[in-house]
Length: 253
Ligand code: SF4
Ligand code: FES
Image (cartoon, rainbow, N blue to C red; front, side, top):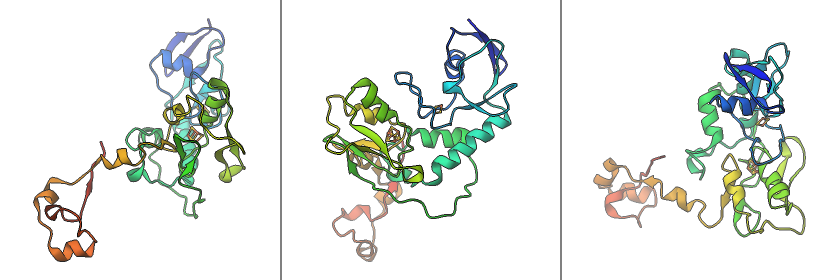
């Protein structure tokens, strides 16, 4: 049972436990995208960086085994700066289409940006364009631009359903998830990849966007106001009920 210190608090954990597991025991949350307790460790997203004393570089908490006397910092400036840099890379090509994303409000990209990011974006180049609606099978749709290539969905089909339909194709910022030629994602548990995806890249075809529409409401001020015919004509709202006008207010819950 090696003993370690995380953010000034001591704990003993079973041999072979990782830093992220030890932190969880202490109730200390370390952000993660690729890590999932039910899957093998990929260690590819790098968002779980922590500072370990006597180790020159930041280490990923999900794949670093605890050793006796280890002293870990999850919230010091060095660790925070590392996480911020990782988020900046992950969001460099992200479309930032949160207002129209089904995952908005429960997305780990949004949450971690607010909790651990808050950097000033420096990326001014053209973002890489990818396909926004790729059917992977009868139940699941992929938005390639929102995918952060954490590989959770791929490992789910490899390790849980053992059907192996999904893979990551191409390299670098052209990398994308897809089904292998001649296959389709239609195993009986296929829709679970929607839940396991930490961002809004995978959605259920049956209710994608529809669920989002249910969150769009007309604001009370607009509901009460009667739009003029000119205004309604100018935005093509002739079919809309007269009292609604044409200015929807988006309410994100
Ligand atoms: S689709 Fe989702 S779960 Fe799959 S690799 Fe992309 S972000 Fe990860
Ligand atoms: S959660 Fe540790 S590298 Fe992804």
